Amino acid sequence: MTMRLDGGISAVVDDDLARAAAESAQVCVRPLVRSVHDRVTGATHIVPIPCGSTREAVCPSCADKARRLRMHQCREGWHRTDEPRVPPTPETPLPDGWEDLDRWADDGGFIPDADRVKLPTARLEPAADGERQTRSTRRLDDFPDLPKQHMTDATVGQTFTDPKTGRVFRPSMFLTLTLPSYGKVAEGGIPRNPDRYDYRRAALDALTFSRLVDRFWQNLRRCAGYKVQYFATIEAQKRLAPHLHAAVRGSIPRTVIKAVGAATYYAAWWPPIDTVRYDDVLPVWDAETAAYLDPTTGEGLPDWKQATAHLENPVHVATLGTQLDVKGLIGGTKDSERTVRYLCKYLTKSISGTYTATDDDGEQEPTAHARAYERHIDRLHAEVRWLPCGPTCANWLRYGVQPKDPGPGLIPGRCPSPAHDRENLGLGGRRVLVSRQWTGKTLTEHKADRSAVVRQALAAAGFEPEDANRLAADQATDDGHARFVWRAPEAGTFTYPAVIAASLRQAIAWRRQYDAAKHALGRPPGPVDNRSATTTPTAA
Image 1 (spheres, rainbow, N blue to C red):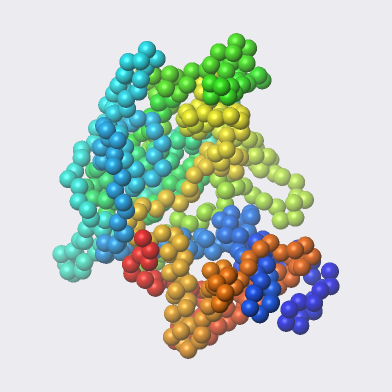
Image 2 (cartoon, rainbow, N blue to C red; image 1 turned 180 degrees about the horizontal axis):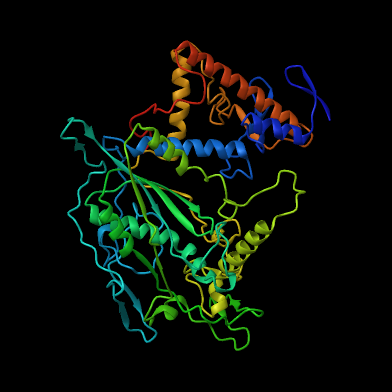
């Protein structure tokens, strides 16, 4: 199309060319467009808002910015020598029978964040006859007990002095955790014998991987004796089994870490999943009893408490693999910086797409390896889709059990958890796990910190930074009403190439100004400096 762009630039562009230009300049390729009307001047602005996606397949530009922000977060907390100042959090009273984090038990519950949850020492549930039944919290017999050290509030590791030179070192670690083998695989990650590959166990391990990792950090802290802090990323190996890379602050003996890895497990105390009771004809929801009924007999399915009241063994026990790697690193070295990049290398890709080759033109015939890899993904996804991801999963209806806290509209195979999606293959939660006292800042505060670095450089060089709140919705006129009115733009008031062109001009202007400021300050041009503008959290 031929169009007249703001600023007097005439160009012949189409959507594909505009997207290519946006990717080249690292500008958001799918911005959310809003119309902002200024009630004082009467002007209306078309404002593109970056989509903020973390997936390269959705928006390469925003995904790369998110990855760089995570790299900054990792770098700032890894080798620090002072304790982060964390804003106090309100104390929440614990229910009766609950203890602090250091006295956890394998109760089969979901642990979303090991730094913020409280775990029970025993799980008491009423049996079907009304009597209270106690589930033992004793560790499973196949796993050794671990000693509990005296805990300190420290998060910074020890220092070591070289007796020959007197130089003081404060090493930290790079840690890799893997899952067990499910069958022999070829070099490209494809099972040598797919029919003998244990896809079900691989799927259940992936679905419970986050709980297993939380158990590992809890055990490691108990054995290390201090509040071990970590920045961890979850990726997929070529065989598609998830593994975890972690930057760990401080140094812990390898023998201790390996012992913790061998003793860590997650026991899923769930109902049996050996037999599918309902496949073609599903249980029906009864609004009167707020329960799911057998479609033939009309009898209610056992609820979650009834189905788990008399379990003798967990339905699945997830463990770590024997490949546990520990590497010591010193802050400020090339190895440390290289490891930060490696940690965040695959954050912009999905689990299933991490090692999947893509053709730029889409016309090349897939290789035999590519076809086999796609079949491997399909086999694993078939298990992940239909297995339960947790107590509230809709897939429990297939096994004749009502999910925990059920509601209408549950359909097996359509659980809303993204863990069941093909691109996630069991890992529907966070891909980045950061302990609370890593830096003492939230990711939003880190983003604001990066912006502050740029503004400080501009101000120091004599440039006037653009007001970030120049179109803020909370600005008011003399009559007390909002000055700027944000709304969806009317159809035909903008085109995609025009929005991208405006974003490109703004990005180019900002970069030129920032490079000029850095030149005036004697700094090399390039991306935002790897430093922090603040030393303490900016918000509670």
